[in-house]
Image 1 (cartoon, rainbow, N blue to C red):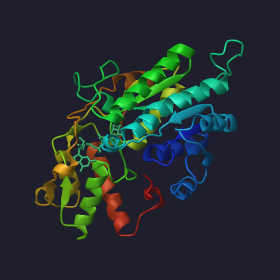
Image 2: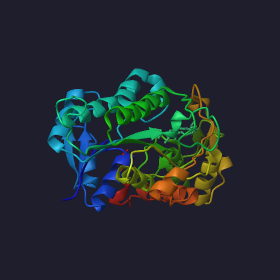
Image 3: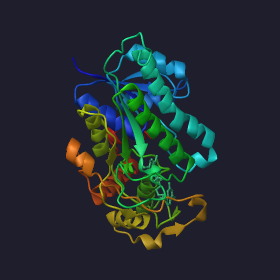
Amino acid sequence: MGKRALITGIAGQDGTYLAEHLLEQGYEVVGLMRGQQNPKAPLVRALLPDVQLVQGDLLDQGSLIAALESVQPDEVYNLGAVSFVPLSWQQPALTTETTGLGPLRMLEAIRIVCGIGEGSRSPRPGVSFYQASTSEMFGLVNGSPQNEQTPFHPRSPYGVAKAYAHYITQNYRESYGLFAVSGILFNHESPRRGIEFVTRKVTMNVARIALGMEQKLRLGNLDAQRDWGFAGDYVKAMHMMLQADAPKDYVIGTGVTHSVRDLVRVAFERVGLDWEKYVEVDPQFFRPAEVDTLRADPARAQEVLGWRAETTFEELIGSMVDADLARLSGSCSREYLEIA
Ligand code: G4F
């Protein structure tokens, strides 16, 4: 019998790549979808016809219990969140409810459905839990590169909410013996990334400029540095973490850092243009508190899981520019459906 996985955030970049990866591994995959007539549902059905959808919302405890009861998953991947950092300053309470307390509600749902921690009832074995933690928890970094021991200093309501979710996952592992792990993923991108994030904003606008549809690209802090990898590589690490002998948290990244300036240079080079003629700095994109620089030390993931990033920064950004050129010229494949 193959395993069954339940994924929250199925309509996001990571949800779609993870679903595809698990289907390839012979899993039955169910995605949690919130809301009535969710506008993303038709896109998910088109991209992932073999994935079933179940109603549920990370804000609603009862709906998570009901989803677990009906799906009976072996593995739960919690990828659902408010994930755009600037939005977390505009809607900090919603971010905390979804990104911070959502994982708590899912852990509680697992505990209740499995009968864990209720003395007389014997636990039903076997729901493993993956929490999408993030390098944003390191924030104002306390040492570089960052590994699983590096202290957190989050810089946004999003980072604070993710730090809470990280610790509550660890606490449920220690309190109830759950196989509950967090992947501390550094920035991961793809042609399916939402256009609000800097990589895709750059690649989409580079493609528009190359095709004569746009004159300028306005960005915020060009000095910010990130460890950018390919989302398709990173979802494999999520799966590996739940197959490991023991539940542990892992840093997932490339170990290589680039600035936003490097990003625009590489993207414009892909279409043979000089970025300095097109990019303007616009203070409206500056953040109230910035994460200046991040770099992963993924040694534990390499040693214990045998995971390593397979895609270079140049390959990643090149593929995103190519995908946006294809989209704009109407020749995009199903794989590049606008999903995020
Ligand atoms: O692409 P970003 O918006 O990603 P950020 O804030 O690092 O967060 C992403 O990665 C995290 C780690 O995996 C996730 F947890 C999180 O959910 C999200 O996926 O911004 C990257 C950097 C920032 O320093 C930002 O200030 O790019 C800088 N930047 C400069 N100009 C810009 C822009 N970011 C955006 N979104 N738009 C700009 O115009």
